[in-house]
Length: 144
Image (cartoon, rainbow, N blue to C red):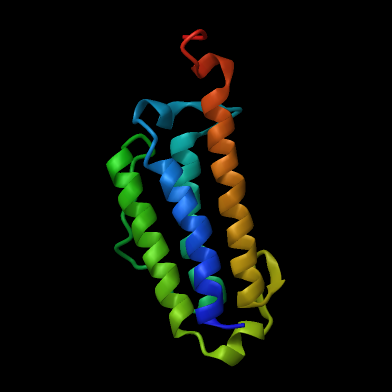
């Protein structure tokens, strides 16, 4: 499996994630479950994409990566677009043989192929969390 096989899988989940992001309002960025807000989940998602591009694909996070507010929807959307583009560029540069080479990272050993699987899972979990947070009673019209 290589970039051409992985990209459609990644794109499908990432487009679904962004579809959800594009429905959010700035007010919803402050909604939370426990200590994590929706805005923080969005920022975290971008951070993880940058980390994985570095750890598993050898593309360092740009030094000019914008540290955005977790309450500014436009900034968060831009950050998410940039992190996704960065990750895709990193995946595209990886040779076919390296997709199956084991790499040691802060989260253990994994191949780049497995890392993309983890990112797909990670992104799916967070889109589900966002949907759940939006439905919490304290965030509904009746609860406000």
